[in-house]
Amino acid sequence: QVQLVQSGPEVKKPGASVKVSCKASGYTFSSYGISWVRQVPGQGLEWMGWISAYNGNADYAQSLQGRVTMTTDTSTNMAFMELRSLRSDDTAVYYCARDRYPRSQTVLGFDYWGQGTLVNVSS
Amino acid sequence: QSALTQPASVSGSPGQSITISCTGTSTDVGSYNFVSWHQQHPGKAPKLVIFEVNKRPSGVSNRFSGSKSGNTASLTISGLQAEDEADYFCSSFAHIGAPVVFGGGTKLTVL
Image 1 (cartoon, chains in turn cyan, brown):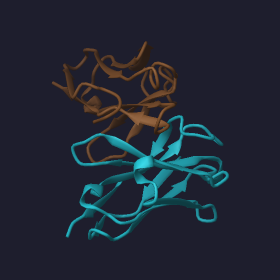
Image 2 (spheres, each protein chain N blue to C red):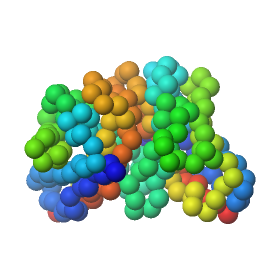
Image 3 (cartoon, rainbow over the protein chains, first blue to last red):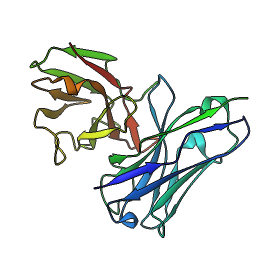
Image 4 (cartoon, chains in turn orange, blue):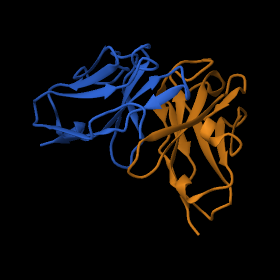
């Protein structure tokens, strides 16, 4: 069955970087895109960006442009999200989510999610 | 503030039906049938229960149904069960700004 397993919780200081991983199994990794979505405690969900494991194309939320990079490694079926210049308002649970449709050129919806990774940014 | 508007909470007794609304605009819910609903139990990964407005993934109970009218999508859960108690959030494809927008989530309490 499809599974997305994320790396463990992180504690970072303001200005640092964090890299969260998402290991996929149970499907052909290179056929689907992966989005990263975050949820600040007590608030709604925010789409951060998307990367196609099919062709490497990426699309980032305008609010995070320049601070976020998403990558994939098809040899290990893993996706990564790196966020730089962390601020206190980056404290959130970060999720990876698989595209609902294979070889999609944009994000039309998600069907499987990782368990979430808490990133706590505090001095 | 979330792009899609959901009620913060709804409740119902076992066996009853409840409906959760998700209101967007003509740039998202109103123009596309890529509306999804996800169920999330505390501390767990979200689970897809409805996609493309009214389609159920394999394995999801037929007690879950979806619909859309204009800029508002709805999730109905019939024959409420204790295990349905969870947070539910909607999402939609959008053609302005981010390609996907979310609702703020609705906490369902089974009384």
